[in-house]
Image (cartoon, rainbow, N blue to C red; front, side):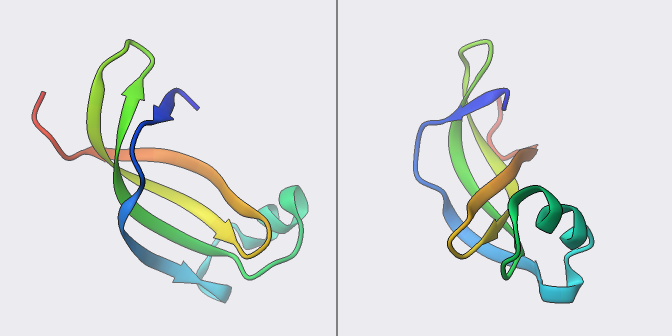
Length: 79
């Protein structure tokens, strides 16, 4: 990751679950079987250059496996 979570993730919403997760096969191969879901939420992160920014994050998660492939989709605050 090129960022570090500084605050807890809030406004968590499920984007896709079960067969709707397009990369389900790759997730199972990499991390194991589970009920994979794609989620989004907002949090404050510290970027590599040291800036603190409020961002929208997307990631995949399965019960007992945890969060994987977290990425920044957009910046919520104004720089």
